[in-house]
Image 1 (cartoon, one colour):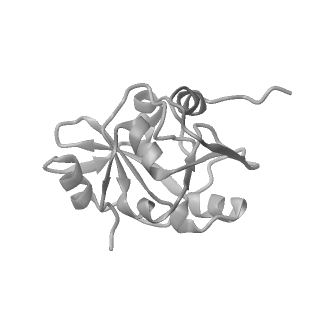
Image 2 (cartoon, one colour):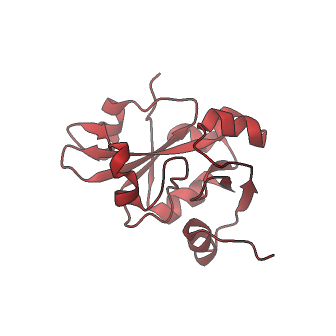
Length: 158
């Protein structure tokens, strides 16, 4: 049986990123903490992708550990915006092309400014959504930054 590839996987291959695909059983939305337990990874090494809107109304992407909460003030500072608010869930697919629980920072409909929690640098590899439920991708955090054009920033509530 041929392995189904997501846009995120195709982009990583095209960009020459060394990555691993982790698959797990999932038919409906599961929070990242639950996924970390299913794949046997520490929560601080499993990242979730959040999409927000800056005061300019432009989408922004934030990649943070699954057990953490996005600090909206820190997110606004990182993005150079006056303020940041979460994108309404009803608009997630329209803006990104992804559904809740399968939003990857790679391969959205358009490229948006992307910020990765600076603690990602503590690890050789991190994991994040591969673009569909039941799929996590593993790669070096610097590679994620390279292919998203992203930047590290302090993003979580301390």
